[in-house]
Length: 469
Image 1 (cartoon, rainbow, N blue to C red):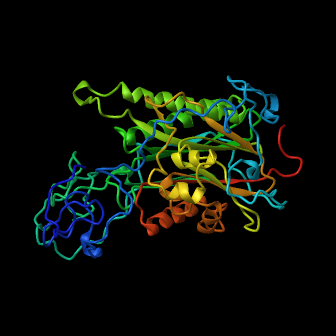
Image 2 (cartoon, rainbow, N blue to C red):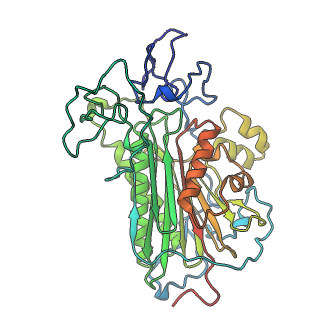
Image 3 (cartoon, rainbow, N blue to C red):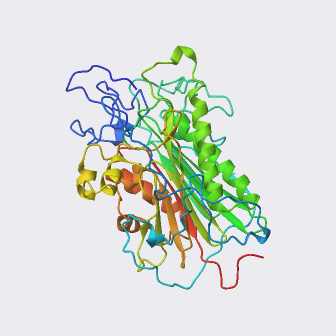
């Protein structure tokens, strides 16, 4: 939304900062209920979201040299019984494929000690392919309606004709019909958009995405799905993408990437491809989908100064006792054991300016993340990205736990693995949707300066003797 000139003392909407008039009970820009929120004229975000700065500026840094941590997985092929060996082989650059325990990933903030044994198990979902990709949901969950004031001095629904059956009703006056442009025909209020808040739960995986308290739209997207491997055992997938705000159409980029990566993963896993190779190929498929957006812009909207659509991506697959993570950018995955006596761990390394400074030994982690350039990303999906080299890693945890897959809208408020573990409910493995809701609430309570998206994926250790048929 472009910034409008206004007087310094004119009140603004606490949700979208649209200028308000005296006596307004709802924001004319986003429909926010002003009667339930006390205005705070001095409450400004501490992070620049739009205008002079962007949430995720991209810094042109040369790609990592061959041999860097997080190289792609080994070639996959249909496997009899899907009894996958450890990921072996080399990639196109001749680099050996990494395979780690969670505490062995270089540069993580875990304690480095091996996770202790812990008996117990819980059931993975039934082996049936299902998918929930919510960027353009056919039947999105309805956002909670704000409290209705006793009377709106600007409008009166008393004389408004009853909306026809099946028509969308205004969330503000609860009487008018919403037109095709998203505004109430009775009171004129803008309606919440479908992507402002999304929730999906599928078997033992769930995800929640929220616009946050400062952004004017949700530029995140996710996909959660489940499929059957050739031996009949289940595979569970979670993909989270974060649109780069300094690029054009970041919301479309994240939606295209999450949908393409999810579909690629499902197809490869059902054919018996090793999950690490499937993840590598899925990230490449997501990149192609985002690249295609750059050529689909109408000539009238083309501007040389605009960046191509872009986003980050992080995905997780749980299948046959393996946990596979893949990513590009600064969206993250965390491991939190069910028994909180064991150490949690961060499973990804950011493609960011701060991470590069720390890896090069030029700054301490505290110094790097205190710098204003800390969150400038150095890797992304998009037509203007450098040579793409997806990061993937395989893990075989020896105890049950939960994988948290999220955008920086969450981890900015729980950056360390210990902080994430404290924010995650103790029963997250049994109630993943509730856990995702709690984590989103944690970010909103912390300030909600960015879009917030998180998927919660339980991991169960296979019973002794179980596994391949």
